[in-house]
Image (cartoon, rainbow, N blue to C red; front, side, top):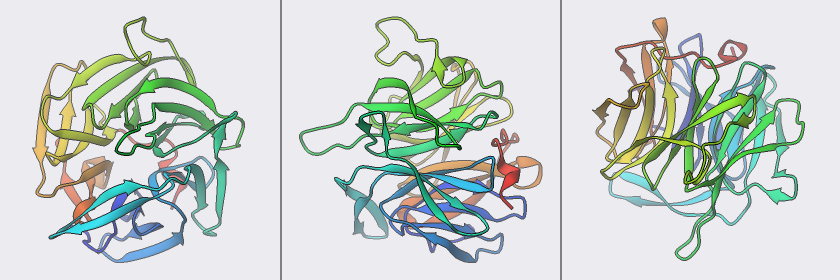
Length: 302
């Protein structure tokens, strides 16, 4: 364990010096955790910073959900509801700590609850909009494609139910998206950056159903290793699900917590898995049997 002093952490980014950036959703901050476990809050943010990725220009790009409410139950903290405030995409300059909002809408459609983000090598990024839900209503989720230069957003996919984790294959030809409450993992074939070659009906979203979990493991964010395995964090049944590149094999690594929300690779040879355990405010480091796939622009943040 590196620390247990975080307030619902998410979005880990492993840096070359052994430290890890996270966002704290409840704590509303971009935070650095050193290899020795010291916690430094780099920038205070509004709403609910939910996912993060390094960009091509020294900025950290952040999905902001608009915010959540939280309750404490025994040793664990959990979300109890969503703010009605629409979410946005923002960025924090790593050196100056300057904060900028980049996107609040796609055309006339306001973003609802941006959740997780991944860059491609061209400087574009995909992100999920988880949507907002209440006791009687639930948004249909979407995937969008944006750019560091702020050109207009493009809607990549719709028809998703609580889309959460998102990741790109090594050849950038497949986009993976995990849905939380359905416990499904979708694969989208990309014909160009930001453009899918949709699967025909009856696919509800244009993706190929890649895997579906049959237990109460609610899927959160994900990372991909160098062998092409998709590694998805889950809560309730807390841990990491490793799904093979063909979707045929499934390995589960349990973790003693309630909310495993994200995984990122770093450390020597990229063989350390950094996992955010949000309900207990922990960031842990686990040895991993294979190296992780490096994130685009990971070396631009130092």
